[in-house]
Image (cartoon, rainbow, N blue to C red; front, side, top):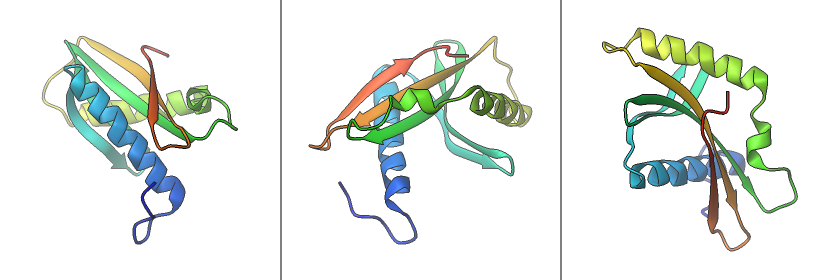
Length: 125
C-alpha cells in the first residue's frame, strides 16, 4: 500500500485507490467517465459515467481486509438521498438531458496482498 501523501490520511489514500480501481473497471467495460470527485457545498459524487445511453452516478466504497462488513453495506438510504440531490445539481449545469439516470455502487475490497476485488451493484436505488 502506498504511503499517505502530504495532507492525506490512510483512509483517504485507500478511498482514492478504490476510486482508481473502479474507474479502470468502468473504462475497461466501455463506459465513458464524465467526471470524478465532483464537489459542491452539499457533498461529492465519486464517479459520473455513461453506460450506453444511461447516465450513471457511481458511489465507490472501499475496504481493506475482511474484518468489516461488505463495503456496499455502507451506502445507506440517507447517502442515496444526498446523491440524488447532488446529481440534480450536477445535471443543472449540463447542456444535455439523459433519458435514464441510474445509481450504482462499486464495492472494492482490497486483500492483504493489495489485490482489489470488485463487486458492481447496478441500479441499487
